[in-house]
Amino acid sequence: MRPPEQIVWVDPGKLNGFAWYSLLYDEMELYEFDGPTCIRRIESITKFVGEYVTVGCERFIITTETPKKSQDGLASIEMMGMIRRAVSPEYSGVGVYEFDEKQSSSDAKTFCSDRILSALGWRFKGGGGHAEDAARHIIYYLNKHHWLSEKQLDAVLPPEK
Image (tube, rainbow, N blue to C red; front, side, top):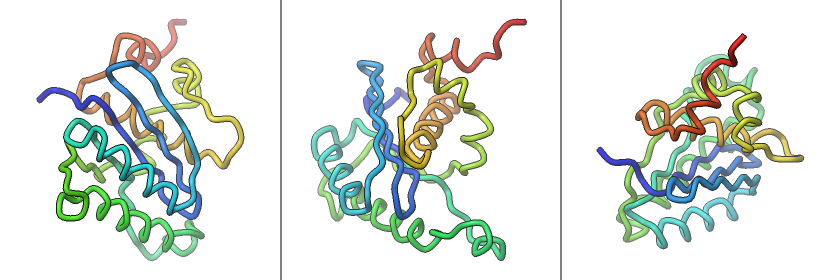
């Protein structure tokens, strides 16, 4: 399977982390958007690059601990539904390369440290850390599929002592 040309990942919530990465140009854009702006950006990207874009959203599992750990759990769930709808061929008229919601927040955070984000130049000044969390999902996704570039591979490898 060949990689997509673009990856968009959303860290859903009241304020959504939004990462848009071009594999063609090795360029990353990071933002934090409200829900409507986030959906409009996804819709415009999928209409523009459609079958060449993967859209991802972190896996959100509801447990008895959810109300204690997440103050915006409902907003996250609602946002995930809106994203799923925005990328569905029935709604958008455009099929995306892949819609991925298999990665957990802890998977991405465990794999991708702040050091890795800094080495890649994927930092977002200000905000609540949501944009960087979305970027962590992209590097984790690329690694899972063995699509890391040489620069990214150098960043994820532990520093030599």
